Image 1 (cartoon, one colour):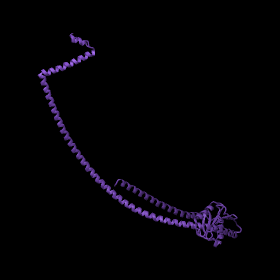
Image 2: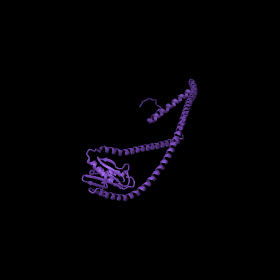
Image 3: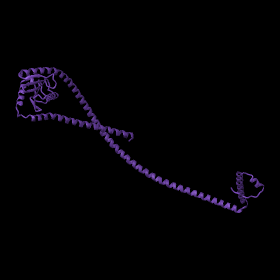
Image 4: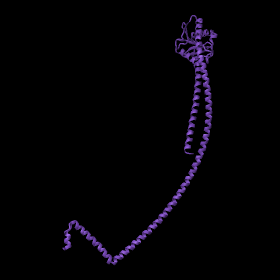
Length: 351
Protein backbone atom coordinates (compact mmCIF):
# COMPACT_ATOMS: atom_id res chain seq x y z
CA UNK A 1 0.00 0.00 0.00
CA UNK A 2 1.13 3.58 -0.75
CA UNK A 3 0.24 6.89 0.94
CA UNK A 4 -0.01 9.98 -1.24
CA UNK A 5 -1.03 13.54 -0.49
CA UNK A 6 -3.52 15.15 -2.88
CA UNK A 7 -5.25 18.48 -2.76
CA UNK A 8 -8.72 18.51 -1.14
CA UNK A 9 -11.60 19.40 -3.39
CA UNK A 10 -14.88 17.92 -4.47
CA UNK A 11 -13.24 15.53 -6.96
CA UNK A 12 -10.67 14.21 -4.48
CA UNK A 13 -13.32 13.86 -1.79
CA UNK A 14 -15.43 11.79 -4.18
CA UNK A 15 -12.31 9.70 -4.99
CA UNK A 16 -11.66 9.03 -1.30
CA UNK A 17 -15.17 7.73 -0.84
CA UNK A 18 -14.52 4.92 -3.32
CA UNK A 19 -13.36 1.46 -2.23
CA UNK A 20 -9.81 0.33 -2.98
CA UNK A 21 -10.73 -1.62 -6.12
CA UNK A 22 -12.60 1.32 -7.68
CA UNK A 23 -9.80 3.66 -6.70
CA UNK A 24 -7.33 1.49 -8.67
CA UNK A 25 -9.65 1.45 -11.68
CA UNK A 26 -10.07 5.25 -11.48
CA UNK A 27 -6.32 5.81 -11.39
CA UNK A 28 -5.72 3.36 -14.29
CA UNK A 29 -8.42 5.00 -16.38
CA UNK A 30 -7.06 8.47 -15.67
CA UNK A 31 -3.56 7.45 -16.65
CA UNK A 32 -4.77 6.06 -19.96
CA UNK A 33 -6.71 9.24 -20.73
CA UNK A 34 -3.67 11.29 -19.81
CA UNK A 35 -1.35 9.26 -22.09
CA UNK A 36 -3.68 9.26 -25.09
CA UNK A 37 -4.41 12.94 -24.65
CA UNK A 38 -0.73 13.82 -24.48
CA UNK A 39 -0.01 11.91 -27.63
CA UNK A 40 -2.95 13.54 -29.44
CA UNK A 41 -1.83 16.99 -28.40
CA UNK A 42 1.68 16.24 -29.63
CA UNK A 43 0.27 15.17 -32.98
CA UNK A 44 -1.72 18.39 -33.24
CA UNK A 45 0.88 20.90 -32.13
CA UNK A 46 4.33 19.32 -32.57
CA UNK A 47 5.68 19.67 -36.16
CA UNK A 48 8.90 17.91 -35.12
CA UNK A 49 6.80 14.89 -34.13
CA UNK A 50 5.12 14.97 -37.54
CA UNK A 51 8.52 15.06 -39.22
CA UNK A 52 9.61 12.17 -37.07
CA UNK A 53 6.53 10.26 -38.04
CA UNK A 54 7.16 11.04 -41.74
CA UNK A 55 10.75 9.92 -41.41
CA UNK A 56 9.65 6.76 -39.69
CA UNK A 57 7.09 6.24 -42.43
CA UNK A 58 9.76 6.65 -45.09
CA UNK A 59 12.03 4.26 -43.22
CA UNK A 60 9.17 1.81 -43.01
CA UNK A 61 8.55 2.19 -46.75
CA UNK A 62 12.26 1.74 -47.47
CA UNK A 63 12.31 -1.31 -45.22
CA UNK A 64 9.30 -2.74 -47.02
CA UNK A 65 11.00 -2.08 -50.35
CA UNK A 66 14.20 -3.75 -49.15
CA UNK A 67 12.16 -6.66 -47.86
CA UNK A 68 10.42 -6.84 -51.23
CA UNK A 69 13.77 -6.77 -53.03
CA UNK A 70 15.15 -9.41 -50.68
CA UNK A 71 12.08 -11.56 -51.27
CA UNK A 72 12.41 -11.11 -55.03
CA UNK A 73 16.10 -11.99 -54.87
CA UNK A 74 15.27 -14.94 -52.66
CA UNK A 75 12.68 -16.11 -55.19
CA UNK A 76 15.20 -15.80 -58.00
CA UNK A 77 17.77 -17.71 -55.97
CA UNK A 78 15.17 -20.38 -55.20
CA UNK A 79 14.27 -20.64 -58.88
CA UNK A 80 17.96 -20.86 -59.83
CA UNK A 81 18.62 -23.45 -57.12
CA UNK A 82 15.55 -25.42 -58.18
CA UNK A 83 16.75 -25.33 -61.78
CA UNK A 84 20.22 -26.50 -60.71
CA UNK A 85 18.71 -29.29 -58.58
CA UNK A 86 16.38 -30.24 -61.45
CA UNK A 87 19.31 -30.36 -63.88
CA UNK A 88 21.44 -32.39 -61.44
CA UNK A 89 18.60 -34.83 -60.75
CA UNK A 90 17.90 -35.16 -64.46
CA UNK A 91 21.56 -36.04 -65.05
CA UNK A 92 21.50 -38.54 -62.18
CA UNK A 93 18.23 -40.00 -63.43
CA UNK A 94 19.58 -40.26 -66.96
CA UNK A 95 22.71 -42.01 -65.71
CA UNK A 96 20.61 -44.34 -63.57
CA UNK A 97 18.33 -45.07 -66.53
CA UNK A 98 21.36 -45.79 -68.70
CA UNK A 99 22.83 -48.07 -66.03
CA UNK A 100 19.54 -49.90 -65.51
CA UNK A 101 19.05 -50.22 -69.27
CA UNK A 102 22.51 -51.74 -69.61
CA UNK A 103 21.84 -54.05 -66.66
CA UNK A 104 18.47 -55.00 -68.12
CA UNK A 105 20.12 -55.82 -71.44
CA UNK A 106 22.68 -58.00 -69.67
CA UNK A 107 19.94 -59.75 -67.71
CA UNK A 108 17.89 -60.32 -70.84
CA UNK A 109 20.95 -61.80 -72.53
CA UNK A 110 21.61 -64.04 -69.51
CA UNK A 111 17.96 -65.07 -69.39
CA UNK A 112 17.99 -65.88 -73.10
CA UNK A 113 21.16 -67.91 -72.61
CA UNK A 114 19.63 -69.72 -69.62
CA UNK A 115 16.41 -70.33 -71.53
CA UNK A 116 18.33 -71.82 -74.44
CA UNK A 117 20.26 -73.98 -71.99
CA UNK A 118 17.06 -75.07 -70.24
CA UNK A 119 15.35 -75.71 -73.56
CA UNK A 120 18.25 -77.91 -74.64
CA UNK A 121 18.23 -79.61 -71.23
CA UNK A 122 14.47 -80.08 -71.43
CA UNK A 123 14.79 -81.56 -74.89
CA UNK A 124 17.56 -83.87 -73.72
CA UNK A 125 15.63 -84.93 -70.62
CA UNK A 126 12.47 -85.36 -72.69
CA UNK A 127 14.33 -87.63 -75.10
CA UNK A 128 15.78 -89.59 -72.20
CA UNK A 129 12.36 -89.74 -70.54
CA UNK A 130 10.77 -91.05 -73.75
CA UNK A 131 13.57 -93.57 -74.03
CA UNK A 132 13.16 -94.63 -70.39
CA UNK A 133 9.40 -94.79 -70.87
CA UNK A 134 9.83 -97.04 -73.87
CA UNK A 135 12.27 -99.20 -71.93
CA UNK A 136 9.90 -99.31 -68.97
CA UNK A 137 7.00 -100.33 -71.22
CA UNK A 138 9.18 -103.01 -72.73
CA UNK A 139 10.22 -104.17 -69.25
CA UNK A 140 6.59 -104.19 -68.12
CA UNK A 141 5.63 -106.28 -71.11
CA UNK A 142 8.55 -108.59 -70.42
CA UNK A 143 7.62 -108.84 -66.71
CA UNK A 144 3.99 -109.44 -67.67
CA UNK A 145 5.09 -112.24 -69.95
CA UNK A 146 7.30 -113.64 -67.17
CA UNK A 147 4.43 -113.43 -64.70
CA UNK A 148 2.16 -115.23 -67.12
CA UNK A 149 4.84 -117.85 -67.62
CA UNK A 150 5.33 -118.17 -63.85
CA UNK A 151 1.58 -118.47 -63.40
CA UNK A 152 1.44 -121.24 -65.97
CA UNK A 153 4.41 -122.94 -64.31
CA UNK A 154 2.77 -122.57 -60.88
CA UNK A 155 -0.36 -124.24 -62.18
CA UNK A 156 1.73 -127.02 -63.68
CA UNK A 157 3.75 -127.26 -60.45
CA UNK A 158 0.57 -127.52 -58.39
CA UNK A 159 -0.65 -130.31 -60.58
CA UNK A 160 2.81 -131.86 -60.42
CA UNK A 161 2.93 -131.71 -56.61
CA UNK A 162 -0.53 -133.24 -56.40
CA UNK A 163 0.69 -136.06 -58.57
CA UNK A 164 4.09 -136.26 -56.83
CA UNK A 165 2.44 -136.78 -53.43
CA UNK A 166 0.84 -139.96 -54.73
CA UNK A 167 4.03 -140.94 -56.52
CA UNK A 168 6.05 -140.21 -53.35
CA UNK A 169 3.99 -142.63 -51.30
CA UNK A 170 4.51 -145.33 -53.91
CA UNK A 171 8.26 -144.58 -54.10
CA UNK A 172 8.66 -144.75 -50.31
CA UNK A 173 6.96 -148.14 -50.21
CA UNK A 174 9.16 -149.33 -53.07
CA UNK A 175 12.32 -148.13 -51.33
CA UNK A 176 11.31 -149.59 -47.95
CA UNK A 177 10.73 -153.04 -49.52
CA UNK A 178 14.04 -152.99 -51.42
CA UNK A 179 16.00 -151.87 -48.34
CA UNK A 180 14.61 -154.73 -46.29
CA UNK A 181 15.25 -157.22 -49.08
CA UNK A 182 18.84 -156.10 -49.82
CA UNK A 183 19.92 -155.53 -46.19
CA UNK A 184 18.22 -158.31 -44.22
CA UNK A 185 20.59 -158.01 -41.23
CA UNK A 186 20.04 -154.25 -40.87
CA UNK A 187 17.23 -152.50 -39.04
CA UNK A 188 15.22 -150.23 -41.36
CA UNK A 189 13.22 -147.57 -39.49
CA UNK A 190 10.42 -145.74 -41.32
CA UNK A 191 10.59 -142.06 -40.18
CA UNK A 192 7.85 -140.49 -42.29
CA UNK A 193 5.83 -139.61 -39.20
CA UNK A 194 8.87 -138.10 -37.45
CA UNK A 195 9.84 -134.59 -38.51
CA UNK A 196 13.50 -133.84 -39.31
CA UNK A 197 14.74 -137.47 -39.45
CA UNK A 198 14.57 -138.18 -43.19
CA UNK A 199 12.45 -140.95 -44.73
CA UNK A 200 14.36 -144.01 -43.44
CA UNK A 201 17.15 -144.78 -41.00
CA UNK A 202 19.32 -147.82 -41.61
CA UNK A 203 21.13 -149.27 -38.55
CA UNK A 204 23.59 -152.14 -38.60
CA UNK A 205 25.79 -152.54 -35.50
CA UNK A 206 27.46 -149.09 -35.11
CA UNK A 207 26.59 -148.06 -38.66
CA UNK A 208 23.71 -145.51 -38.81
CA UNK A 209 22.66 -143.96 -42.15
CA UNK A 210 19.84 -141.52 -43.06
CA UNK A 211 18.02 -142.11 -46.35
CA UNK A 212 15.89 -139.45 -48.07
CA UNK A 213 13.79 -140.69 -51.00
CA UNK A 214 12.29 -138.61 -53.87
CA UNK A 215 10.02 -140.06 -56.54
CA UNK A 216 9.93 -137.08 -58.98
CA UNK A 217 9.65 -137.18 -62.75
CA UNK A 218 11.82 -134.01 -62.84
CA UNK A 219 15.08 -133.26 -61.11
CA UNK A 220 15.01 -132.86 -57.33
CA UNK A 221 14.99 -129.12 -56.61
CA UNK A 222 17.31 -127.07 -54.42
CA UNK A 223 14.78 -126.61 -51.52
CA UNK A 224 14.61 -130.38 -51.18
CA UNK A 225 18.42 -130.55 -51.05
CA UNK A 226 18.49 -127.85 -48.34
CA UNK A 227 15.89 -129.80 -46.34
CA UNK A 228 18.08 -132.89 -46.70
CA UNK A 229 21.09 -130.91 -45.37
CA UNK A 230 19.04 -129.57 -42.48
CA UNK A 231 17.73 -132.97 -41.41
CA UNK A 232 21.22 -134.46 -41.56
CA UNK A 233 22.87 -131.62 -39.61
CA UNK A 234 20.26 -131.70 -36.84
CA UNK A 235 20.91 -135.35 -35.96
CA UNK A 236 24.35 -136.10 -34.57
CA UNK A 237 23.74 -139.86 -34.45
CA UNK A 238 23.83 -140.11 -38.27
CA UNK A 239 27.25 -141.12 -39.59
CA UNK A 240 26.33 -140.76 -43.27
CA UNK A 241 23.35 -140.05 -45.52
CA UNK A 242 21.97 -140.67 -49.02
CA UNK A 243 19.59 -138.54 -51.08
CA UNK A 244 17.90 -141.03 -53.43
CA UNK A 245 16.04 -139.94 -56.57
CA UNK A 246 14.15 -142.93 -57.92
CA UNK A 247 13.17 -141.70 -61.41
CA UNK A 248 15.15 -138.47 -62.06
CA UNK A 249 18.36 -136.62 -61.40
CA UNK A 250 19.22 -134.11 -58.65
CA UNK A 251 19.67 -130.39 -59.28
CA UNK A 252 23.34 -129.38 -59.79
CA UNK A 253 24.55 -132.77 -58.53
CA UNK A 254 25.96 -135.58 -60.73
CA UNK A 255 25.17 -139.22 -60.00
CA UNK A 256 27.18 -140.61 -57.08
CA UNK A 257 28.19 -137.08 -56.11
CA UNK A 258 30.07 -137.12 -52.78
CA UNK A 259 29.92 -134.27 -50.27
CA UNK A 260 31.15 -133.93 -46.68
CA UNK A 261 29.23 -132.14 -43.92
CA UNK A 262 30.60 -131.92 -40.39
CA UNK A 263 33.30 -134.42 -41.47
CA UNK A 264 30.58 -136.93 -42.43
CA UNK A 265 30.05 -138.24 -46.00
CA UNK A 266 26.80 -137.90 -47.97
CA UNK A 267 25.90 -139.20 -51.46
CA UNK A 268 23.44 -138.20 -54.21
CA UNK A 269 22.07 -141.08 -56.32
CA UNK A 270 20.11 -140.70 -59.60
CA UNK A 271 17.48 -143.02 -61.13
CA UNK A 272 17.90 -145.63 -58.43
CA UNK A 273 14.68 -147.46 -59.40
CA UNK A 274 16.42 -148.64 -62.59
CA UNK A 275 19.46 -149.94 -60.70
CA UNK A 276 18.98 -150.69 -57.01
CA UNK A 277 22.53 -152.08 -56.94
CA UNK A 278 23.75 -148.48 -56.70
CA UNK A 279 22.12 -148.30 -53.27
CA UNK A 280 24.03 -151.35 -52.07
CA UNK A 281 27.21 -149.97 -53.60
CA UNK A 282 26.73 -146.68 -51.73
CA UNK A 283 26.36 -148.54 -48.41
CA UNK A 284 29.57 -150.51 -49.04
CA UNK A 285 31.33 -147.24 -49.98
CA UNK A 286 30.24 -145.58 -46.71
CA UNK A 287 31.33 -148.55 -44.59
CA UNK A 288 34.73 -148.54 -46.29
CA UNK A 289 35.23 -144.82 -45.62
CA UNK A 290 34.03 -145.00 -41.99
CA UNK A 291 36.21 -148.03 -41.21
CA UNK A 292 39.35 -146.34 -42.57
CA UNK A 293 41.00 -144.01 -40.06
CA UNK A 294 43.60 -142.31 -42.29
CA UNK A 295 41.10 -140.77 -44.75
CA UNK A 296 40.82 -136.98 -44.15
CA UNK A 297 37.45 -135.63 -45.30
CA UNK A 298 38.01 -132.04 -44.13
CA UNK A 299 39.39 -130.82 -47.47
CA UNK A 300 36.51 -132.40 -49.33
CA UNK A 301 34.08 -130.69 -46.95
CA UNK A 302 35.74 -127.30 -47.52
CA UNK A 303 35.63 -127.79 -51.30
CA UNK A 304 31.99 -128.82 -51.11
CA UNK A 305 31.03 -125.81 -49.04
CA UNK A 306 32.89 -123.53 -51.45
CA UNK A 307 30.99 -125.10 -54.33
CA UNK A 308 27.74 -124.41 -52.49
CA UNK A 309 28.75 -120.83 -51.62
CA UNK A 310 29.80 -119.94 -55.17
CA UNK A 311 26.25 -119.84 -56.67
CA UNK A 312 25.06 -117.88 -53.62
CA UNK A 313 27.83 -115.31 -54.14
CA UNK A 314 26.91 -115.07 -57.81
CA UNK A 315 23.23 -114.56 -56.95
CA UNK A 316 24.18 -111.89 -54.41
CA UNK A 317 26.33 -110.16 -57.03
CA UNK A 318 23.39 -110.15 -59.46
CA UNK A 319 21.13 -108.80 -56.71
CA UNK A 320 23.59 -105.96 -56.02
CA UNK A 321 23.71 -105.18 -59.73
CA UNK A 322 19.90 -105.02 -59.82
CA UNK A 323 19.93 -102.68 -56.80
CA UNK A 324 22.39 -100.39 -58.59
CA UNK A 325 20.15 -100.37 -61.67
CA UNK A 326 17.13 -99.60 -59.48
CA UNK A 327 19.04 -96.75 -57.79
CA UNK A 328 19.95 -95.37 -61.22
CA UNK A 329 16.28 -95.51 -62.23
CA UNK A 330 15.18 -93.79 -58.99
CA UNK A 331 17.76 -90.97 -59.24
CA UNK A 332 16.79 -90.41 -62.89
CA UNK A 333 13.16 -90.09 -61.81
CA UNK A 334 14.16 -87.53 -59.15
CA UNK A 335 16.10 -85.52 -61.77
CA UNK A 336 13.07 -85.52 -64.08
CA UNK A 337 10.82 -84.34 -61.25
CA UNK A 338 13.30 -81.57 -60.36
CA UNK A 339 13.40 -80.44 -64.00
CA UNK A 340 9.60 -80.28 -64.04
CA UNK A 341 9.55 -78.15 -60.90
CA UNK A 342 12.11 -75.71 -62.43
CA UNK A 343 10.00 -75.49 -65.61
CA UNK A 344 6.90 -74.70 -63.53
CA UNK A 345 8.82 -71.94 -61.69
CA UNK A 346 9.82 -70.31 -65.00
CA UNK A 347 6.24 -70.55 -66.20
CA UNK A 348 5.06 -68.75 -63.05
CA UNK A 349 7.69 -66.03 -63.68
CA UNK A 350 6.55 -65.83 -67.34
CA UNK A 351 10.12 -66.38 -68.57
